[in-house]
Amino acid sequence: MHATSPSIPAIRGVRLAGVVLLAAASGSAAAYTVTLSPQAPQTIYLQVGVGAFTNDYINGGQPEDNATVNTVSITMPAAALGNGTAQAMTTNSTAANSYWDGFLFCSVPAQLYIGGFYRTTGAATAAAQVTATVPAALTDATGDSLPFSNIQWTSSGNLDTGAEPFPAGSFVNGGVQTVGSMASNTWNESCWSFSYLNKSVPPVGAYSGVVLYTMTAP
Amino acid sequence: MSFAGGSRRPFFLAAALTIFWASAAQGKSITIDDSGSESLEPSVAMRWKTAAPSRATADNVMVGTLTVRVRINVTPWLRRSGRIYLVLPAQPPGRISLSWATQGRLQPGQLQSGNRVLVYAGPITAPFMEDILTFQFTVAGTLMQRAVPVTYHFEMDEV
Image 1 (tube, one colour):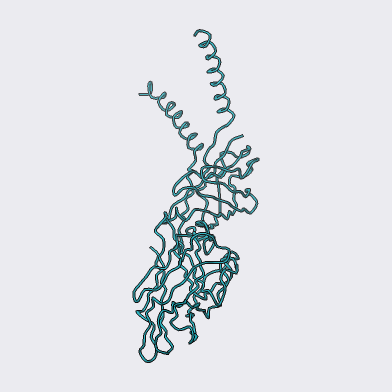
Image 2 (cartoon, chains in turn purple, orange):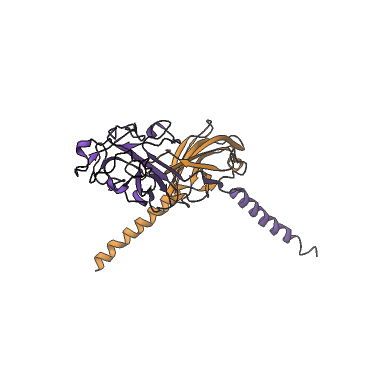
């Protein structure tokens, strides 16, 4: 036994040293792993008329809730009733400046601001849709009615060129209609100028109706 | 034919020498054990860089910060000189930008995934190097549909 065994520990010793050296060179090194977690990744903001931001977006502003319901109206001059000449309507909205940069974008009271955005993570998705839920007619206190299709709007914005995100249109007589869309992660805004088509002579009265605008993100 | 063949041989030889010297000059990079490092937050909360997007073009940058108490084991290089790099490998979810501030032991910097940046050069005088790094990760929101792991490491170029 002793005649042959002394060489074996020596060989083992060499191999062991080699292993230790390799371990020292590589250490127990491993990459440090952190987890990137998207927080509140989807955000939508729609403003029709007045809205609320803590500041202009380019100055770090954050969107806020605003429950104001604005009015677009016209008092028809008796002499013009039913003559077929569209009559411009005005709004009580004071929203003339874009919350993006404070730029004077709309002209009040002639125009109603509509704008917003939606934020979403992940690959490109379908655009968010903005719809209007429209009653069948405007009505007065005595039950007379005017079809909502008597109201139309044009769309523009100061210094705007090209297509508007919220284009011109006219109301349907009851139902839900799409009035614009927003691609993901873009700011969209337009100024609407409403007019009453004035094609008939309805009974005297104060006609009103409420249109609800809804933004739906995919 | 024979003339053309003769002119090619020196070219291949020169190319081989160039590769050999480039490899020798690059030296050896060894990943440093940073198992002593710890994050002060459990994860990086990625938020939109701006609350709202821009007007005309898609604006989808997300940013998040993380503070890490970095402790790297440089014992194997003690009493030698070395160059330490922060390495952010190319990895999912895609292009990642990383910047960091330090308390002074390591150098601040920034890099894109797939690259490395020097954070220390000089003598190694202690078994461990420690610093507090505040990282800022920047990733396109289009890549951030869900939480994703991201790895970085430090590596040593022996001088």
